[in-house]
Length: 143
Image 1 (tube, rainbow, N blue to C red):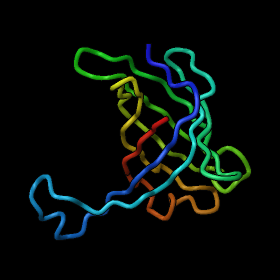
Image 2: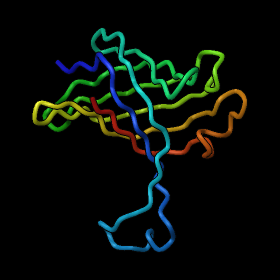
Image 3: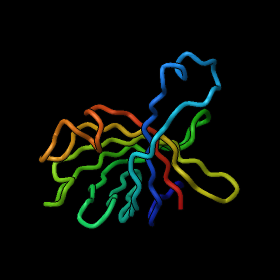
Image 4: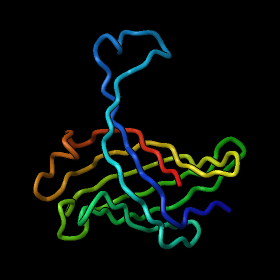
């Protein structure tokens, strides 16, 4: 059984290719910028549900709720979750969705996937971390 309980290092990236990078052949490098870094603590896991907090700094926290899809013959286990800013901090009202493959290799576990900025905080709902709503990026979780 796949378990995510505990603390994870979270990083997300926004991919911003230049026009010449977009025209380049498959496999060429593209520009990406770090979007966010934080600590995800999965506090409760009742298969298949997970919950926890994703903290980016003092008071900047998303409450995370989601579930794990079990692995199949053709896919690893998948984490599907929504993070919502629920306190009176700078992320109050923000909504982000993450979906990622849970990878287990060489005795290590990591999660790699996509993050969608659905809504910015109440103070600026059309902005998610300096980007327009519905910005999609990549994320990683590692221990």
